[in-house]
Amino acid sequence: MGSLIGPVRSWSRSAMAKARPRTASDQAGSTDEDAMRRALALARRGEGRTRPNPPVGALIVRQGEVIGEGWHHRAGGPHAEIEALKGVSPEQTDGATLYVTLEPCSTHGRTPPCTEAILRSGIARVVVSASDPNPKHRGRGLRLLQRQGVAVVRGVCRADGEALIAPFSKWIQTGRPYVTLKMGMSLDGRIGDRTGRSRWITGAVARQGVHDLRRRADAILVGLNTASADDPSLCWSRRAALNPYRIVLDARGELPLQAKVFSDGQAGHTIVAATSAIGADRKAAVEGLGARVWICGDGPRVDLDALLAACGREGFLHVLCEGGGELAAALVRQRCVDEVWFYVAPRFIGADGIPVLGGEGWLLDQTPTLCIKSVCQVGHDVLIRAVPEGVEANVYRLD
Image 1 (cartoon, rainbow, N blue to C red):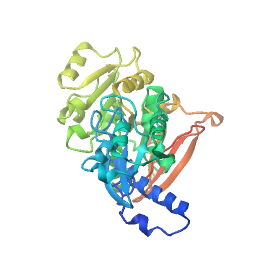
Image 2: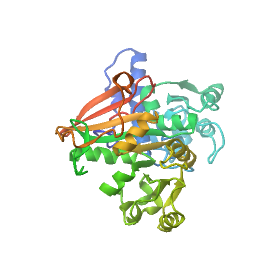
Image 3: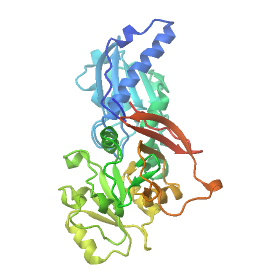
């Protein structure tokens, strides 16, 4: 998924030996949790790069020593279990324990089943954090291993494991991406002053947190007003291959062709979500720059349901919306948001500033409500993370 998303947490090979001794079962539980936390940290290195596969990490331990580790780098590449087995001989893995954040696959896809490699290796015990959310595959790999005499432990650091794959779970079960709404605002709920200026409401530490969140997303979604006023690149790296796609809602194709999302050398990672109102000449001009145009509806506004369906078909697991207020409000009204990240700065802008949610509001007894999952200080600002009330959701950890 350091502060916020952060660097991978270090885990000492001797951590298990240093654990406070209790009963044998207590020691085993502590050892398993320590090792799984390391596997989860490894998995987070792959976030935003594995679509349409989930991020997965794996660790191989024998007699208290880590002998192999790895994570899934990209779709079509070796799975985490195979990465962990690289360079480790069968003599070393015989009788070892494999820790993996998601249950091993047991079917042929772009790569062979990981269960076959596990059985060949002589690994005696497999510890899993999360089960496969795909109903067709859930539990299949673990049952296969058990039938072959491999000991299986399920649900170690389960909440963290399920949070890690929350975007994949949403996509595999619904065909739609997991949508995170991120907004930076003043203490009185304004995302810009009366002139439209918004740089910078929040501080440098919060902005770094946003870069980390972008790294974990497959696509970043913004409205036309935000793209025009702020002219953001929406990138976190100079390497296009590492950056998420940029999606701009622009029904009629009004965004200037000089905008950074077209002119920063990464136009191939830009998608304009338009309607049939976009002219043929304008569509050709945008595509001529290397960007793509998706037609999402026939009306004056982009059909968000059609857009998210297109994102799902593209294999986007996680879409990060960064505003503006009109788009944020539309997503909330249509119940498209799975999680919110609100960075709140300790300053006032006033009633004539731009509100965090635009358009017509709600009557008090009809207001959308949220369940707050965490509140933490980020530099001088505060980060509030929440999910829609009544929705079962595992949010990302902040470590």
